[in-house]
Image (cartoon, rainbow, N blue to C red; front, side, top):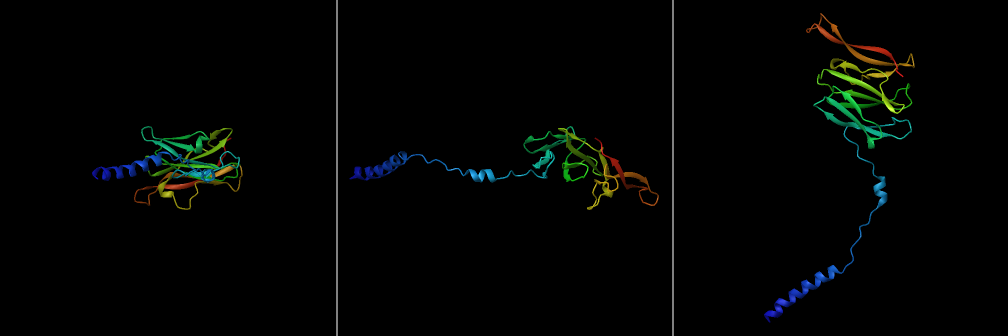
Length: 192
């Protein structure tokens, strides 16, 4: 009787394991349509634009910040375009510009500097398979920045030039500090 009580549970559990081993393996079903429809998640601060001019937008993002060399690396989706390196910076904010002087989208980089009193701007255009700067970099003091200020735009009076803002040091006897930063605007030719 004791032997029977021991043998019955052994047979039940033993038969169950044998039947599980004889089942054919289940192949996973992959729905390829859902994989193709998914769009890549954009990195933080990324923007999409048509820099190449082929009506195919790619995204641009701050790829890396090297604090030891004070350089910011701007990268592009799937490394379709070469990185842009912003010297003497510890970060950046990216903005898309549409300027009538250029058929492609234009990248405006607001570089973060160690001196947080200034915003330094770079304008980049993809032309002839390299990144070009149609205008030199320029700075605007934080006291001149407003929510509505557009640092660079088309010149409505001359289509071959751009209007950009910049800050200049101004001796001001009326203020407590005896100086201020004056916001100026200039028309600059577009470099080829």
